[in-house]
Amino acid sequence: MDKKEWFKNRLIKYMEIEAMSRYEEPVANELKEAFKDLGFEVSRDNLGSIIFLKKSSKKNAPKIMIAAHMDEVGFMVRNIDKKGQLLLSPIGGIWPTTVIGTKAKLVTDTNKTFLGVFGHTSIHIMQEAELAKAITNNELFADFGFKSEEDALSQGVGVGDLVYMSGETILFNDPNLLGGKAMDNRAGITVLEYVAKEVANKNLDVDLYLVGTVQEEVGTRGARSSVSLVKPNIAIALDTCASHDTPNTIAGNTSLYKGAALRIKDRGTMMDPKLVKEFQKISKKYDIPAYKFVAMGGGTDAHELQFAKGGAATLTISLPQRYLHSPIGVCAISDLMAAGDLLINFLQDFNEDIWNEIRYK
Image (spheres, rainbow, N blue to C red):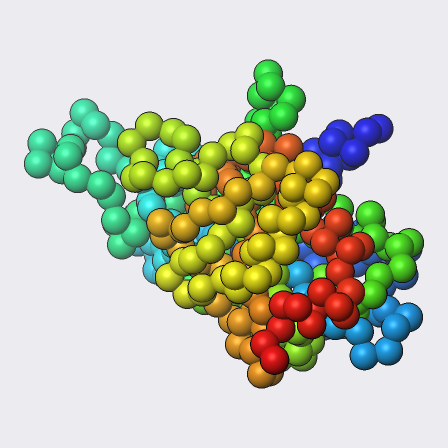
């Protein structure tokens, strides 16, 4: 199996795991299994982020942290309607229009599961004034076939139960394209594993921390707790970003097939210009496609990573994705692997001399 096929298979594995914000343990367990023979030290923070450390043989080596969040967006039951429909509260930012009429999966606090549908009013019986309006999260409900509130309660359903989106894995005719649930950010998690496997047997001049963070979708919380333990000199977030190569988007230059996207600015972070230039050098030296962009919306774990003790030189390497925060997202495998190859070569080339050129003196 070549690297691209391996990468694709691992991404499918991660996407098909269900792990909403605050319930990321299934992804952490898969990462532990993937890393078990790679020689990394494993630790956790108290919010659940998982930290893999590859220690350098050099004393006082620069500390580099690369973080990818493990959680996916979804919904939580906020109330049960008298007719048995479940009213929902979003976990993460979701435009509810993307989910109506698609399959829903309910998981109770006793791990009992039900399949159903994200409901809506049929067009034939809608008020005409409602036709031009987008549904809101307060109006969204899921139908699991319960006949009444009492019926739902009798089957163990309650407030706080989780409702997952259930987008299937899509294999396009173009083998470079892949679609699936939770592409944000299982794409980043797969890059993290790819980097780990490629550098596991290399002698690095850095202490490398590869981190799967929790609760990014609800406020970059795991990045804050994990970076406080790692205290890196350099911190890099790996996350998907919106691709502007579909109709009706606002202007922007991220696109599938162009390689890794080096984020320069978003609403929470101004990336380190010297670190950006270092990755541009790596891109040119090893002929790895990469380009700069300014995010037109959203943020990443970098918002918290920059606040490592004393501050960290910070960058987000973004992975362009179509249809974020919906049942099925789409990425180009070549873009994801370009991000991984950038990081692998950066880690192999980086040393204390380069750090002294980058850091403030």
